[in-house]
Image (cartoon, rainbow over all chains, first blue to last red; front, side):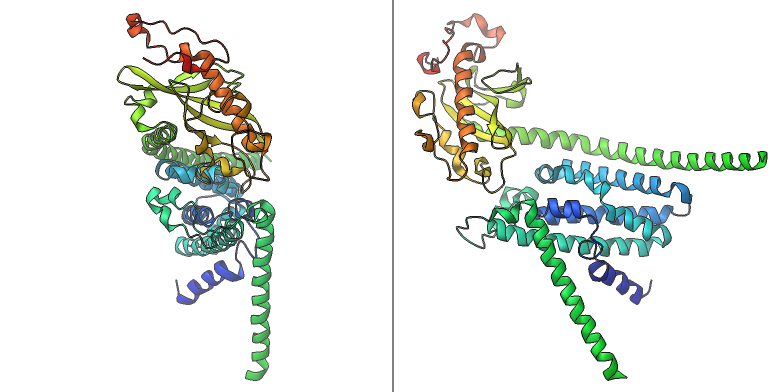
Length: 224
Length: 236
């Protein structure tokens, strides 16, 4: 794998084809679980883990899977991996498992995972597929984290609340009370807040892209 | 024609077998993970129950294995339960010191609020925790101990203190605080806790009866009359 291929895959995953901001895939967990930073980060990482493992497995098995049954096989692979993640989280980070609840099994139905398996991993070598899945997952996680941070800050005035669910009671002091004595802003915590915050993020992303395009267009004639 | 059908069925069989192999591999993988994680999952579930029980019972009250003391209770209107619920019995030495009941407040803002209510032998609350609810996040969820110490005000209360007229939220002229803007939720919790205390008072004799084998030891605890605070039969 060359450096430029690597670069392209990351550029697609993080920005150009970002799952959350451009492809708008996998919005169900994105909107439901992004009410705090810790929740968002945890679900993002779990999704990324499943994507990387699923893409690697799909790519490795791609020569053995007849075209007609590729979707059932991919779903089977993804569902098994999700179940493994579900069991492992239940066993080792139980409190967090209780918070994320139904959204872990629902990673199975997250279309971004199947989309990368079918659109990329089934046609590319394992290394490329794994890197692609990692970049896509990272892009999604970043959007989730920003969204979670925005909503938590606006909704509760804190950051990293619930970190004790991951690292135990001792992590409690890491919770940042950014706005002390904050009364809370319910809209940000409830589902509409997720749509509004995502809308703002997409707008910012598009604005940024439009500016970059404009600069590129301006630069071309000058160079010519 | 025959040839075509033959080729198609051979192809279908091949596809089926491939699918089967994938399914078997995935199943084996899952079985392996399941057997590897099962003990840890059970442990964390028990630890969670124990931690919750520890929050409603002061450690000084018991030295027995609480998980072991779990009993099933028939559904009861006062507990708000429609299905059998659990009860745990705290003992120090042989003497029963407290019980923990599961209760449900059916009239929360958005449905049932599940509670764990610790009551000592004198009918005083040792602690109350909300275990599950669907109240509005950020508004009605201050009943969760992790969000707000509100629920601590039940500790030490009994049917005598405050008296029946004051077993209400402050807004209704009662003893218990509630945050402005969200009174339905605490009202439901206060009512459910009171009913759990009444349940304990009514069933006290049965609930704190010594285990059958140690029975002959003695003093028949007079069955408390309904609504009678447990206090009137002092513990050992």
